[in-house]
Image (cartoon, rainbow, N blue to C red):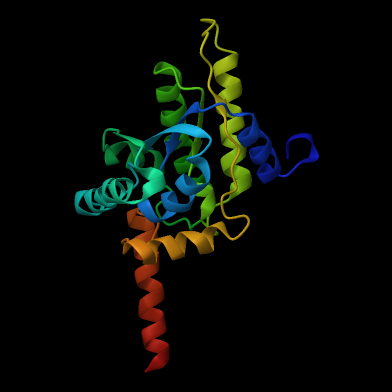
Length: 222
C-alpha cells in the first residue's frame, strides 16, 4: 500500500483536497454505484462511465444501465451526475478471456477484466480533460481492492511516462468503498430505491458458476 497507508486513508486525503475536481467514475452497476455517489457527490463533479464488455447479454447490459439512469434521476445526491455510455463490445472481453474460460472467480481472468475496464476509463479521462478517474468495483466484498488500486496507480504512471508529453494526466482516486459499512449502505439504498440487484458479476463464466452452486444446493436439499 502507498506510503504504508490504507487505500481508504489515501482516499480520504484526496477527498479533502478535491476542489470539485472532475471525476470520471467507472460504474459496474447501479447498486454498487449508489453509495459511491453518495460519498463522492459533495466533493467532485462526477461523470459516471459505463463500460462493461464483460456483461454476457445485451438484455442484462441494458437492464443495468437503465437502473443507473433511473437512480441518477431519483436520488437527490445523484441528480447532478452526468452519464457516459461507452461502446458495448463483448467480443473484446471474450478475446481477453480466451483460454481461461474454466478458471474460477477471482483468478487472472478477473484481474485482466478489471484492467480492461479501468484502462478504457483512464484513456477516456485523459482524452476528455478529467482531473481524476476511479471505479465503483471496490465496494464489492468479492472484488480485490489491492488489485484495483494497483491497476489504477499503474495506469496513471503509464500516462505520466508517455513520450508524447501529455499535459493532462488524470490522477487515480484511491478507493475501497466497502469500508465503513459501504457495502451495507449500498444494500440499504438498493432497498430504498427498489434497485435491481444482480446475483453474478455479469460475465457468462460467473453466471455459469452461480448456476452450478444453485444446482448443487438444490441437490443437497433433496
